[in-house]
Length: 242
Image 1 (spheres, rainbow, N blue to C red):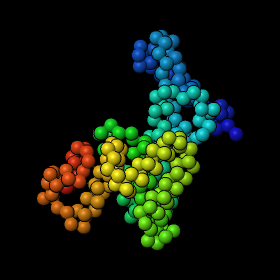
Image 2: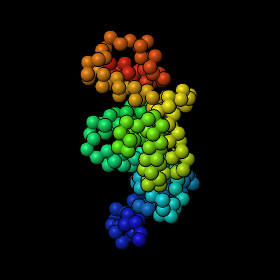
Image 3: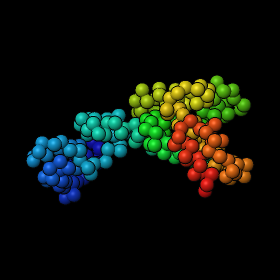
Image 4: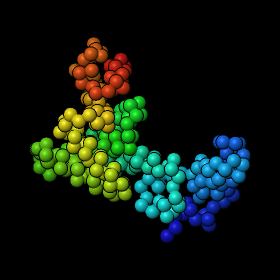
């Protein structure tokens, strides 16, 4: 079955449109399913600015459907995948809204820190969303699980979710490795691991403020003892000043 979005029988007059070349200002005509077109004025090959490549982040038939994906998009596939991972985690946790809220806050902090520090956004965000699912799964299986049981359950569940979304094998390996290193407190100097630890600490800091066990008297020096990045320290000070 052909994807309806790419089937011409579902198109109307809005399926053909004109865009301006960013290099020379010439008009370039696009069909809605063109991933890119070469400008007749200067020869620049520009990506279709109105095309939504979102489904290609997880569809295993993306290249057959869309043709060779533009380089600008290929580098963003892992980043787009994170949104699908978030949905799957919410489905898994069902009505555990407290944990869902904590995971979403952790992911929000991780995203800001990853952008500020220049870390791999896709790997960091996928790991942030999947960070706690191993604990939930292990508790259901064993009641009072050991650290190794939590790590093993987390690796199994994270792998299942990522493979369901057709994530690349390298990304699956990186995410699972990052989560395991976090739980083992391995002390590795990976930027993504430092960001993940800072994001989780920021969530705990917010919760302690809400429970009135942490106050604005905490100093930057105090925070520096617990945080691994300068961006994390700056964000923690903002949290304390709210």
